[in-house]
Image (cartoon, helix red, strand yellow):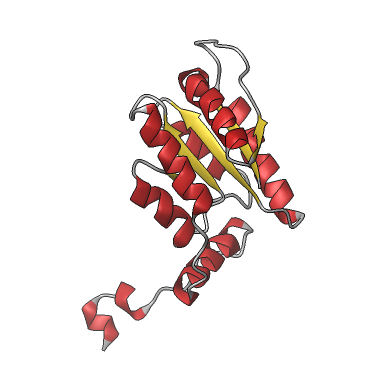
Length: 169
């Protein structure tokens, strides 16, 4: 499996570690930068490229995933989610990494390089890459609602539970 990786200066050390870890575990890591430390670099430059590569390859039928890394992972997640066809989840535990794939079929995971020990963040990525999407109907339905909205199809219809009690009757 090909794994696209991008970061900013705060995630550079983890990015480099993950690329070596990926190679050691049979993955093809693709480095979207940065390639040198620059405290003033901008995470969208690298994270958008990693996410776009994932979206392009998945649209071609390839089994690619992505990892974006920053200080907190928040901005990197936001950047990746701007790419049409990408679902990026912020992982801060093994469970959030597992559920991102299992329930949300996330295609990119974001981790915060300043928030966890290196071993923990590596484990979050490992869990994310190993977990398949469950394919449960409820999860498929929800992902389809998001995809419809993303492509200009509008908001999903409101269920009865969204109406005030006086109108449910």
